[in-house]
Image (tube, rainbow, N blue to C red; front, side, top):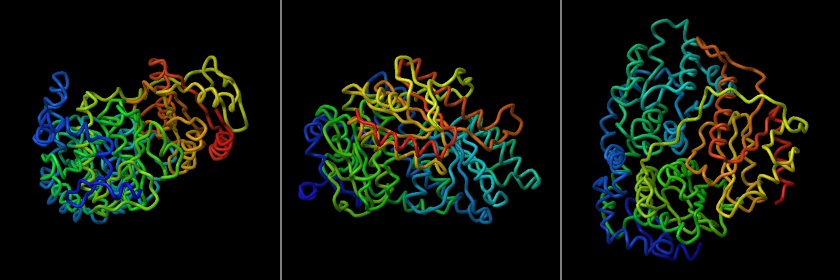
Amino acid sequence: MSDLLAGRADIAAGLAVRGADAVGASVRATLVSHDVPARLAAADPALWGPAAEPAALTRLGWLHAHRHSRDLLPQLAELAAELDDLDHVVLAGAGGDTLAAEVLAECLGRPLTVLDTADPGPVRAALADRPARTLLVLAARHGLDRTTDAHLRAYRQAWADEGPDAARHVVVVTEPGSELAARADELGAVVIPAEPGVAGPWAALTAFGLVPAALAGAPVAEVLDEAEALTGALDRDRDNPALALGAALGAAPGTGRDTIALVPDGTGLDGLGRWAGALLADATGGRVLPVVSESPDSPGATGPGVLTVGLGGALGAGVGPGVAADVAVNGPLGAHLLTWAYAAAAAAVTLRADPFAAPPEPVDDDAAPESGPPSSVEGPIEVYAPSGAPADLTGALRWLLDGLGEREHLVVTAYLDRHADAAVTGLRPLLARAAGRPVTFGWGPRRPQHTDPHGRHLQITGAVTDDLEVPGRPYTFAQLQAAQAAGDRRALAGRERPVLRLHLTERAAGVAQLLETAGRTRT
């Protein structure tokens, strides 16, 4: 880290990127020679080639979203004052449209309940928490998916006794003219228009990211100020931290480092890596693998084939102590959000990726779970091993890890309760240590699917002891979640990706046994 501190930094608007030129100096020179900094700052849709240009024409609004979003501030202030008695803000929507708001609220220290799952546990917990004082924010570009529709139905039933006043409990964030906007009119809900064409992690500085965070009390005007302060640097060849970071990210695969480890450096903004990882997966289409590490000393955070990027708060040129990073990025949150989006788009130029390609098809939430007995049962864990794999738990895990090729990684997806079952996240470092290969972890169905072509998969599901009906629908939340997990497995099978499924018949005991087994597993 001392070498990193001694090296040159690109600094603007209180955000510093160090170490990038040691990785990407030649790529940066190439980008500059093709006038990429100025063209990207000017939202040139031709940067990613003719095939990508039609999508880019409508998807580059994130570059100026921080300016357009200022128009929302008076409405948000008025709405927050009008609804100040509703102090429990719940955000319901698909993962890509909720992640930025969740990270904004977390980094700014504001409480925001996020529902992007059909698991009955978190849904029941949210419904039980101050229902009469709950403000439900529905976020979707077009219409509600089946899970978010279920959330709305559950809340409307909870508010049924409140009569016409129930409408004031709902705020909708969607694109103008969308199916959801029409439905919001029927509900009598407030509609806040989102930037057209900007979706998923790219939408952090649009209404999708800002509205839920602002209603939860986050100082979003300051975030917009921080992004605006960086804007003047984006067309520059030097002293442009976003360009420096983008060049390093784009150069990494050419140096044999196609895994980007995103490591919190202990200086704040610890949740930011989740959003940055999703953004990089979107922008590069699987050409790099973002891995969100728990800490600097977590397995997989450093090593051969890994570009380690330390992330931290508003320390200007500072970096956290003891972080063995290749690149360090430190600065205020709003500057981070714009820097990472620009850097991801610039990296896509180098990697010849279409950063705005249509996202993968959503998980099929109408798939019937497969029938058939498990290959083995070990205490509270049912093992559903694929053909050719050992039937027992330890053997199946070893088979999954031993089969990882030189360019492959392991994807762990848990269709569980990310609060009550949070201990299962400990699998990622245990399996990374055992595999010696990159391992990612995600909560279903949020997991990005861009990296599936190079992945082997471990899916974890769990029994539900206290299910919840979906009002007006012929299925329960648990049945909806089971269908999502089955749809995920079916999609992976269609791409000929190996999937080992472990079903926990008793969740807490199953997680404990799984962690113990993974800790003993070696390739």
